[in-house]
Length: 351
Ligand code: 13P
Ligand code: SF4
Image (tube, rainbow, N blue to C red; front, side, top):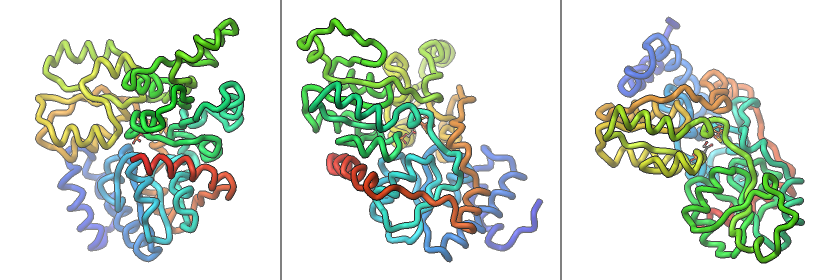
């Protein structure tokens, strides 16, 4: 056990009240020591720490000033008066913070925290689609890099995708890059969807083409694509009263078979505000631990070995090093940033 300072001891006691059933005691002591050093340095550096809901429990419940989903954290990044933003999340989230707060130093604790979905599309892909569908507005999911956002008209997150599509009100919209989110949005907004890279139909008539209200891409999240309707059936057989929550990056079949689908924060609120005999979350698995820690009176079933490998890169050790060494600085080309800002601001205006 490391020698603990008074502040580390206080941090240990604070973390223990929430995490003693989730994190082994020896680990909790080590993490409390790290967390107390981070909090001290955070004050000295006039930094704010933003923590995505997928952060591992000891980090999530200790150092962030704010936790939330992508939409909530981008709103905070836009308004902070601190000099430094440490983004405990993945790169596209830290980039969104930089897009909104160009004068701040934005740090991501690990350069390896990417996103499989964000890597599924390039700026050139968006330009090609624009050529193929001239004049059709482009909405890109926040899980994309800044250069892709810069080619887009609107950004959206899982928390407002349907709202953004409805607010645009166009007959046809290009919606990128998540195939499943796009299909879920199509279902909710009553639109037909086509994936031109998967089903190129040279014979398709212009009239037929116009029937497709959404034009999608075939990116997927490597975590959410793993959940199946068989998983749901098996759990419901054993626990008939279970309430099943899904993230809209799950397939439309999985979402349709669940009881509630929403952003990471919407799922957290749903569990806090309802009273079911059991809950099952079909999303990244650290969030299940975070919800279990917050709701000791609720039974959370676990079907989870699916940790996002990118979110998993962000540790308390790296967060401390980020503040000590001012690493890893997120910088964007100014023209790309300004163009991406238009899309992000339009999203924030819609809500
Ligand atoms: P939220 O915007 O719902 O927090 O989701 C982000 C994400 O990466 C989900 O996989
Ligand atoms: Fe990307 Fe999926 Fe990880 Fe979210 S859970 S950051 S979409 S890889």
